[in-house]
Amino acid sequence: MSQQTTTNIFDEARQFDETDGLRRFRERFHFPVRSDGTQPLYFTGNSLGLMPKRAREYVEQELDDWSRFAVEGHLHARNPWLPYHEFLTEPMARVVGANPSETIVMNGLTVNLHLMMVSFYRPTSGRYKVIIERGAFPSDQYAVESQIEFHGYDAKEGLIELTPRDGESTLRTEDILETIDREGDAIALIMLGGVNYYTGQAFDIRAITAAGHAKGCVVGFDCAHAAGNLELKLHDDCVDFAVWCSYKYLNGGPGGVAGAFVHERHAHAFDLPRFAGWWGNNKQTRFLMGPDFDCLPGAEGWQLSNPPILPMAALRASLEIFDDATMQALREKSLKLTEFLEKCLNDIGDGRVSIITPTDSSQRGCQLSIRVGDKALFEKISSRGVIADWREPDVIRVAPVPLYNCFSDVAKFADILRECLAK
Ligand SMILES: *Cc1c(COP(=O)(O)O)cnc(C)c1O
Image 1 (cartoon, rainbow, N blue to C red):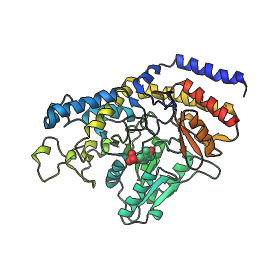
Image 2: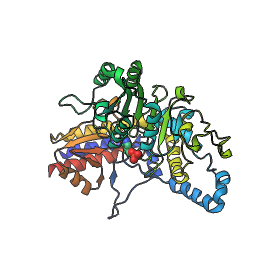
Image 3: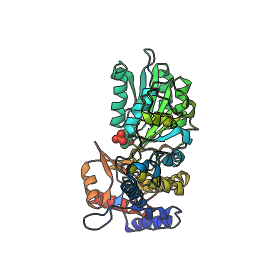
Image 4: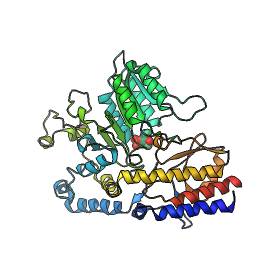
């Protein structure tokens, strides 16, 4: 690689950064600092999003109110704790393209996945199968298999795992739709990721949902890698249910509170089986503490427990940023940022690295998954101050996040990767 080309990517990055309307959002986040005082290049917002600076203030305010009001904070905190989850509902609904009544922030992601499957995976002997992606995130795989077994079926027989064609790394939409069409009569539930965590492939939520519904299947998505990354339209796409976590692209903090979506056509489906808890009960009568469960309509009716205020306070700080930036603008920048990363990687032109994420940008979010010869390259770039992540057996995942990554970050990363390959 000539010096000339290297200079070009830095110039190009600088120009992109200068005209980037979202550039100022970077200042609203804390970046980690290495032991030598330098700032690493952070590309793992797909794993743990950076901390919004205001998160500390928001959490401290709740700590402060706890110290001042104790139990009376439920009603008298500046943001009363009893209805606290409601402060998150609308901004979260905007992030995932849902109506507020379809959206709830609660629990952890895998917990929500189970709660949704309790209601929406209703197998019968003739129709009990579940479609997932081969190589789905392990928690999803375990959750789905254990649900199949819970209903008395054999998990291996009950699972249909979508697999790429020989020699290919990602799934073709036509193959997904064809499988649904072929096997649909035996399928109770289609449960895919919105974006696959490993390959970075984004699935066609609308087409898959329509194909599933045409065959009488329930269709749910795990949007852990899609929420805050793609411009989701869960309502318009008619998805039955979805779940996601808040600590990846949503910057809600480690172990942050997760989200769930239930389409409004199920808002009054009180005949569905569900695991109930007191927070899903009618708000007017909840504190009468009566023995009979009076289920709230909409997504709120799936709540179990009173909301965890401290992690929700941190998430509020982040969701405000999403409201200021808007998903539409974020996605617009994201497309350019990832295309720039792709171009820089292709320019390196080294056969030892290849991108397995689809080249069609409508089939991916911000992440590119780079297949490399061996882990040594990952260790080299890490020692040069790149925070990316390694996924066995041979992939480095790199996620330039439009909220806080800039084009110059990408150029620096590509330059480090080029140098490490040259050595
Ligand atoms: C991150 C992630 C999880 C993690 O589950 P938790 O319950 O939040 O620990 C599960 N599934 C997918 C698809 C993920 O990306």
